[in-house]
Image 1 (tube, rainbow, N blue to C red):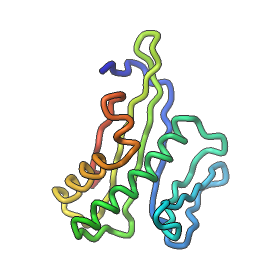
Image 2 (cartoon, rainbow, N blue to C red; image 1 turned 120 degrees about the vertical axis):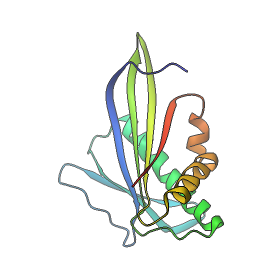
Image 3 (spheres, rainbow, N blue to C red; image 1 turned 30 degrees about the horizontal axis):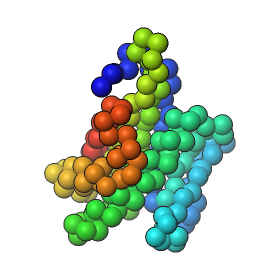
Image 4 (tube, rainbow, N blue to C red; image 1 turned 135 degrees about the vertical axis):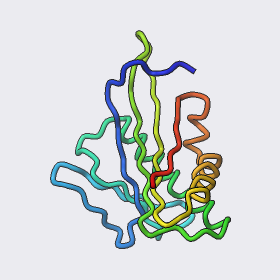
Length: 148
């Protein structure tokens, strides 16, 4: 797989479960709220998106919402209680190697209070079932990270 030699820009998202259906960002940002198809009452939000987001940021946002739901699904199956402040941060870089444009991504998951080995298991299991992770597997460089 070809690796990026020069990063041109990075699309970043911060995704959390929104209990009240309203996540807030600053004046120059846009907060987006998504629901899952099987549970329209479950709201997933990514906040602080620039008013004119890049394709990389939109891709990161859609991926993070899907991945967030995958983490919840895996945790439920493993009977692991997730913290209320569970967060998924995805960064998608647009870059170049010579004249070729490429993408790469970092999935950073914060699960305060969950033992690191359990969090690692959930992060990797969610990556196996998330459709966005499946679509990118083998096509772009992706790193999965548990943030302490």
